Image (cartoon, rainbow, N blue to C red; front, top):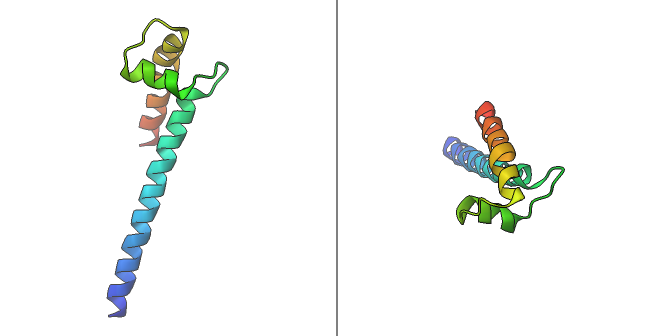
Length: 78
């Protein structure tokens, strides 16, 4: 019986660790996209990525500098 409890507890701890790592990865990805010499607000970020705003300077910074850098960083971490 004690083995079953230990196994169940270990699975819960593993799930918590995985969820925490996923949340940390999402938060740091958003920070990587928003923070830099030119700060880009989250509204501008979502406008560029999801609404198709491609004319602003924020769009150029995001699409040609920050998004490729962030994708490369995420792939290197895998």
